[in-house]
Length: 298
Image (cartoon, rainbow, N blue to C red):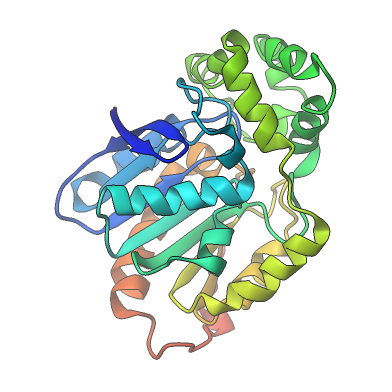
């Protein structure tokens, strides 16, 4: 793991290096870069994968500027990361957390070549489902976030319906979840960062404004959705793809929200095809809407 200093503080990242097309892969709350381990392995040396651990509760160093640990602020940090590493022609990939859509809508986007939105927050689904709303609620009650994190020590709680059991169809390995929840269980400063982020959910009017601005992102966009997802409504996939002038939808069966966990090989193949075909070609003329025939299903 490498470290890079941003305005809010220092973050860790995995960078596979190499001359191939660059993918920057982003995770959600109480996860770290390891979410993408199987996808990165599948992509292999043909791609340069940069996978940061964002300050969303599984980071190991508290942020120096907690005021930036918000949905908008973390989106800004992603833009800073691209600049700090001098990454260009980047395909930005989101899963679960959808806040980086603020970067697509508001910029700067000069370092981007495309984006892939994989089963992520969209429209008014912030925070998503029961797990997201539980974290947001616990952040507002003194002491409750500590309790919520300590409960994640138990396997039965991790796989309980309505909680993390709805995040992936296949259990995340115990050692990985221990890594994800350990920082917030042990460190009060990490919990404060997580609490700040959880209480920063944009208002409905802010989210509506965001949706109105997303069509200004005219680069290729791949929307990957899981029809069985219990947190991200199925209808959000086609709606999200239709927002972008160069949007395209692919549905992946036998998966919940964490497609990188449930279907890493399929996701890696879809990302590779997207980068090699859609991004490389710019998907035709700027502003050309993808046809419905471009959609795929699992």
